[in-house]
Length: 154
Image 1 (tube, rainbow, N blue to C red):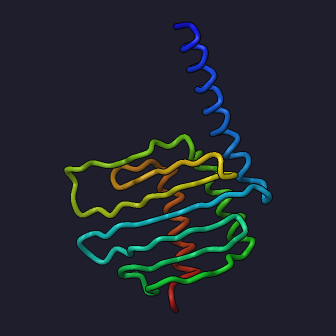
Image 2 (cartoon, one colour; image 1 turned 60 degrees about the vertical axis):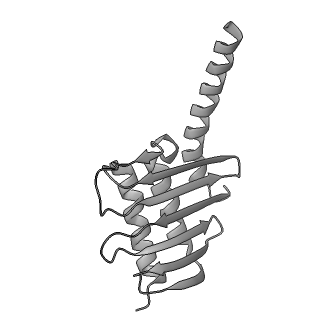
């Protein structure tokens, strides 16, 4: 029993250190990361898309329903945009967010699922649809502005 408790304590300590280090690591331009965003439809005209952003600035956007740009678009995001993304993700403490924010009895709300992978060793997926925390909302709002600036036809 004691070995189990010690192992559990060590695992908890490693996990919590990893989360904090993830936020600090994001501030370094040399940190490899991938950030993926996927949205679902609502009963109206909510944009449905997938967006993958690599730390190199390569972004792959796939507009599916109701965005001004449908289909797949590849783009290299400017350094300033990537610096801002790193800052927003680091400030959100992404790895400390719950995995799901939802209320199944509430209808007509689209969901946003975000996955952050750092150095291919740490990954966290968060799905938000209802009563999402401020940190999640800030990341979501940033991504929506980024999407409009870089992927919507003018």
